[in-house]
Image (tube, rainbow over all chains, first blue to last red; front, top):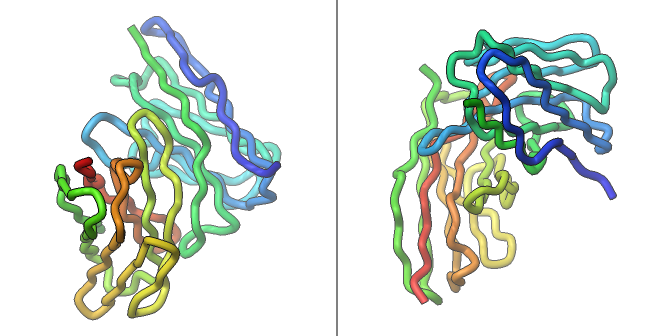
Length: 113
Length: 109
């Protein structure tokens, strides 16, 4: 059963703590993405990766970091430098970048207090 | 600035009627266009892709593309209460896909 999994579904953290969000896909997709969604806002691209061991900053990369050591996995770390980390985080994957369809995981809702 | 524009709504449509959702985009060289449905609290789900000018039909959904006018639309025939959701238009621009902020659709029983 192919798909994208994200864990956990809900995450609560105190201000000043780093937190890592998991994203795994078994679709054999080369490209993976992290988006952030805030109420009333569109999806904003944080980071994306076209191949293993390579990734690029999106529009709002400050305060975030990623790694892509395996094709199936693209974890996102929200660091204490991110000023407003409370949001809905969505991971997506696609066969390639640009014209290819993106498929989303179920998302992680992060609350930082 | 590369943009995808949608009317935020809400768009209220009686059950059984046709819902029409519209989207404009700024990049003339875009080649791929997508419609996603997002229920409240859930992640976006791809419902239609369109790559050529004209209409593409899939069940009750029809996507329409006019590259000259930089306009893409989604028609939902025989609207059902389960169609109530936010619909996101997405357009490829370079190696990224840019998403609109979405149109909230409400189907009135």
